[in-house]
Length: 341
Image 1 (tube, rainbow, N blue to C red):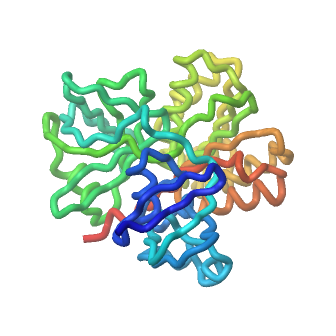
Image 2 (tube, rainbow, N blue to C red; image 1 turned 60 degrees about the vertical axis):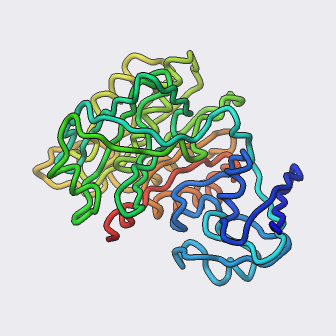
């Protein structure tokens, strides 16, 4: 007999088996919970277990601490029920209108945007309709039941292809293949769309877009979606990188800033050297946001990058700048997972 999972508020009640994670059961029932990596690293799906026991599953101990567990928190992407469970999760939406699919695709173009960043354009089957929200990601399906997650960098209006920005991870299982073996016309398979990182269009609040490295990919999709949809809410992009080369599409962002009256671009370099010739902003990218916008109480923030950047920005924007916790939307990249065998 299946167990019961209840999600509050909203009183969503659904069946769940003992070998399903709470997130898997919700998705199977057509519900979208906030989530990101699905590997217990990013922490976006962390929430309260109101009643019932769970197996916490495999996760990063820094993301879900023993203190978190004592406070009744769990990562919904990892936790499995031991009995009927009631959880609290805000921001639950219906996913019925956008089905998750497994599809083949063909490598149509490969562009080296930086020494360690490859832009892949993947052509989708002409007979398939692939719907998604700007900012979501796909899982590339690999042999041995392995999968690697990458955000789509194009808006859904261009749904005959998807664009991925892939950073080379040394000894990475998939990324090394991209940089050393992959060629145009290769066939890949993917599953998607996935994730709850997308533009909330029911608000007119000004927006801070915060990107670290290839976290620019879903931000690019959000901006291009806004352009195509005629959305003119004020947006300021803060894009951080260790060096100028990591701002691999800075010219595109600068073009947006030059042509869109509602868009601003602030590039930030954290580790400049004299040979870089960099005379722009330096330091940590989230600190640049706080210096320019000490009051974020009326803003929405969309952030994408490495988990430490996301965690720090989430905490400090709330504690020092008054950003409401429910107005911080994030997608955390976990590059280290790519290097697993």
